[in-house]
Length: 173
Image 1 (cartoon, rainbow, N blue to C red):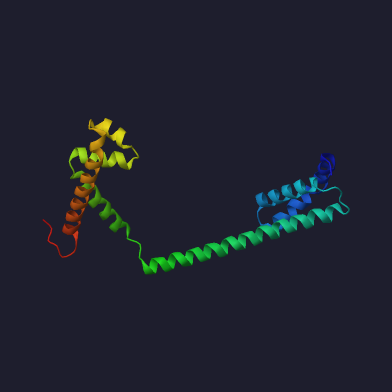
Image 2 (cartoon, one colour; image 1 turned 45 degrees about the vertical axis):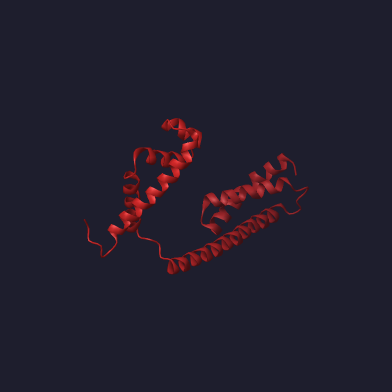
């Protein structure tokens, strides 16, 4: 079909097709999208013998195909949700309060480090390479590996000490 034929079809049948699809789908925007795709497909056809029947058949097929895709997506989401629930039962997610407490301990541990160690770790975490860290901290590139290793060790020690003080049964100091 050429553009003029499809334009003629559009003028003759678009209103009917959109009304039908709106009643079927309950959504005018979706109905207009399906109708538009139907006319795009008409462009690809050599010839249509029963135009109106062809248009309504293609529109129905598009709606059915979308419903099948939607059903598959829903089934997939249900499976994902079930897997998530199984994981939550096996490994309960920490509460917001627990996550906030954990973040506070980490922040205090980082803050307790010497400035050079803290800055080296934070720069490395941001993706800076050894050369960039060395330049920023006015150190030799060779010393950055040692600086980072020492900073990591001190961070772990500080974190573990702070965590031990916050565990139930430990008297707060």
